[in-house]
Length: 80
Image (cartoon, rainbow, N blue to C red; front, side, top):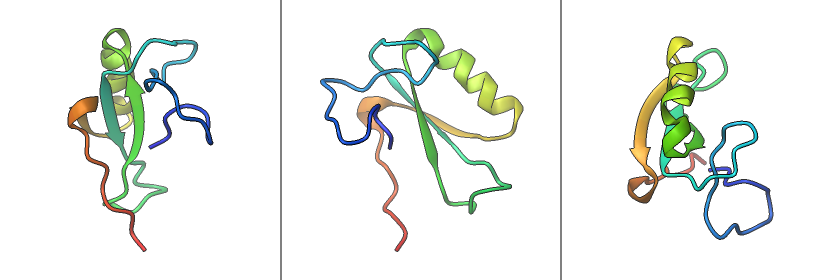
């Protein structure tokens, strides 16, 4: 999961919405079937304010697979 800037440890993950610096509360798991294998999950993070907007953006494209509270998210094991 990309939690902001590679190589840094943020105090708390921030929302993926452009220009938003709010703490993330949600994980939006998605997959572009033209690019990714069916089991692959990419993630965006969302604050309360942007969860619906980001979910709709992914949903209308058929990419959204799951929306989970950040504190309940378990990333799938990396495929070797």
